Amino acid sequence: MRVFVRIAVLLSAIWCLAGPSAVSAHAIIVSSAPEAGATVSGEAVAIRLKFNSRIDHAHSKLTLLAPNGAAQALTSAADAPVDELKAEAARLSSGAWRLRWQVLSVDGHITRGDIPFIVH
Ligand SMILES: [Cu+2]
Image (tube, rainbow, N blue to C red; front, side, top):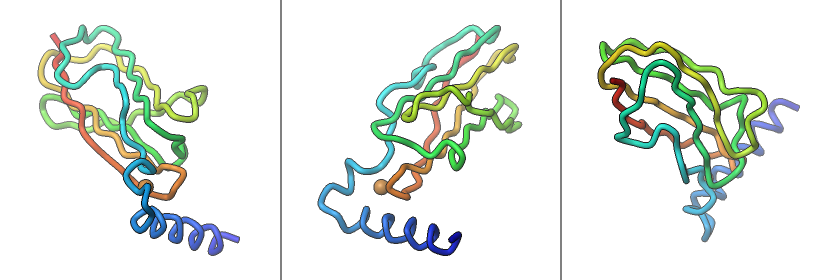
């Protein structure tokens, strides 16, 4: 069963690369909080990433990178919509932070990126 799932994922990834609608099939961000380049208060930061397609929450991750480079894994809320990652961060120190995301979309393709933001 596991092998079958792996093959199915692999085939869909290949399909994704070869298919005519490959670009639209990947999970890309359509909106984010914080927005890239935004300045926020570190007291409570509501993190919300909305994608253009369904994502596999179990195989997607969020990492917060502190101004000093320290990485902290965030857990996405279980009640997040099928096309969103949601998390909370609080009491962040002042400086330049990055929110690093990696998601597995339902077509089996992994996408990732960084969202830089400032805490003041
Ligand atoms: Cu894809």
